[in-house]
Image 1 (cartoon, helix red, strand yellow):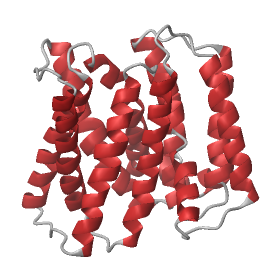
Image 2 (tube, rainbow, N blue to C red; image 1 turned 30 degrees about the horizontal axis):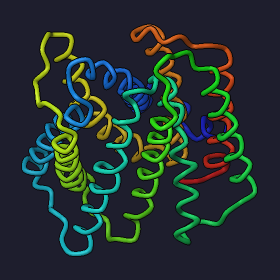
Image 3 (tube, rainbow, N blue to C red; image 1 turned 180 degrees about the horizontal axis):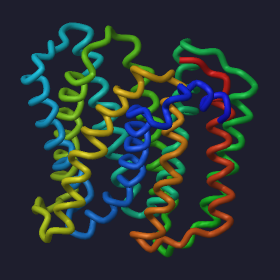
Image 4 (cartoon, one colour; image 1 turned 60 degrees about the vertical axis):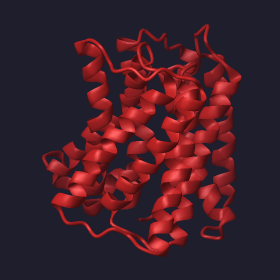
Length: 299
């Protein structure tokens, strides 16, 4: 942690970039709590399809307003695969798993993304496997086991937990897979990926026989609007802003901080009971991710 913090400029305590980083962490940290809240009215896959569909519209507007060039050829293939694997696949599994998984446990599992990304990069020949990575993975497995045992909920389902893990794996694979294709503008990639992913979720919703309804009540509309704009659009733009000014490793530290925000919000807003055993498991997971995937890595 000290190494990453040392990469942040001394003046960053009053630097807008620090506030952008903290806002990004809070927006992502609260997303799982808000998603579970929308399930009280919106079916699982329809909740994701409607959210990401509207987010796609916003990104297409940004494409038009900023005259962003759309990808072609292999670059378009990469953007398409990103939408299929990451959003249509990974986030669909996330949404289904989150229905029966406490938001705090969900975010802890999702935090292993950097470590999974590193493992997939090794499989694709982009990285080398190091003993530190293996040790970090063992810490993560132990931490998730402890956190699972310390979670107080009558709705826990092992198959839903495995769905969250599979979703995290697909998100990690997507981030590695797209590196085999020429890069395209991130706003264009997001517009294409969200359009494809939301269409896949809509199809899953139809196959599941879900009823397509609109949110009702001001509180539900606030939660839904937050998901459409906050984690999906604003946090993405803030992430790019921070990444341009800080090192990649310092920016990626936000992925380790988000579960801490989720735990606080889940306990205060969703009445999730956080036990000492769960916190011990969460700490093991975060230490495993830090030690195995982020420590001593440079952008």
